[in-house]
Length: 196
Image (cartoon, rainbow, N blue to C red; front, side, top):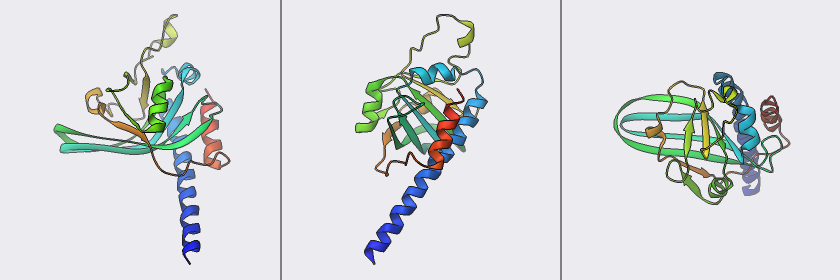
């Protein structure tokens, strides 16, 4: 009986991960469409990892918090060497009230940050320089544009995070079973990325 329950649990866990990857694919497409000025191709070519959070929930009433679960593609985003489940969470104190839910795409340009996420966790703004959304807006108009931040972030919701409220967020690998690379969700994510 225990073996049957364990087998059912494993099948459900694998199915949940495939759904997360499929949601990440849809969120990547939606987020990049929302940010047409983003230098996506250049970011993908320079990225050491791409992280897609299909849903990050941010809630605040004096005390605030945020949480989301996503997928990290390690290595060349067009043919990643590894894929894993990661989460992001954080808290804040201050004058705040409300609820927001949005997708978030992170382009990580530093190998050491990828290693930190895989080994334990990193804290945004403490361990990495961070640039949000409109960075690269004039990418096509400047011939010597260079990426100077460690992480570039894009969201599908205007004004989702102010830089200060995103600072202190912790990004870490979860203990979840890695998503399968021979799944419908993975193929959909690779298809979304290959459009750039």
